[in-house]
Structures are given as structure tokens and as C-alpha cells.
Length: 93
Image 1 (cartoon, rainbow, N blue to C red):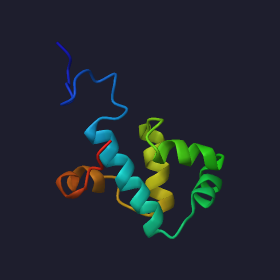
Image 2: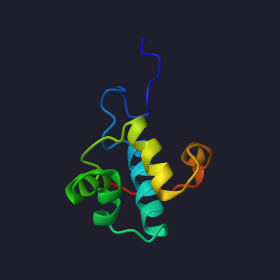
Image 3: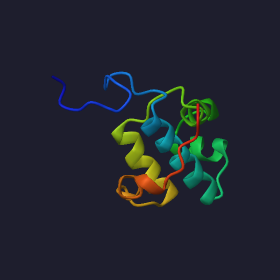
Image 4: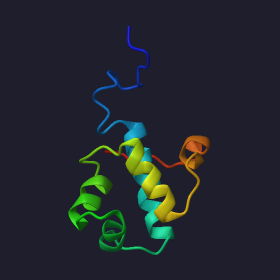
């Protein structure tokens, strides 16, 4: 039995789940709130714009280290997403 089961099924398949979409919506809104373009955020991360585009379109996962960097760059509390999960509008696929 898995230690954690996400609502949609197996934990290893988190891309496209409601929680993943909520996280992406949250991060995208934080970037916009910070007044940064995808290119500007990518530069701050030391990545290409396509890295941010793939993240924001839900084509790639965000690991915990990336999340920490995003929180620092976009100036939000690391715990904010997890404490406001019910307030984050989850976009439909």
C-alpha cells in the first residue's frame, strides 16, 4: 500500500492531477503578481523561457528545490500554497 495516494490514483502520475493544476495556477498567478514575464522569471532561475512555459502549461513537475527558488524569487511564503489549497481555483484540463 502506498504511503500517500492522490485522489486521481498513483502518486507517480501526478502530472495533470487537480493538485498539480492547482500548484501551476498558484505559481503562474504569483509570477504575474510579481510583475514578471516568463522570460524574466526564467532568467532569475538561470533557465530558458521554455522551462517556465513548460512548467506553467503543466508539462513538467516542479520539484521541491525549484519550488523553494520560486518562493524566494517571487517573494511568497513557502507554506502559502499548502495553507490556502482550498482557496486556489483549480483550472479544468
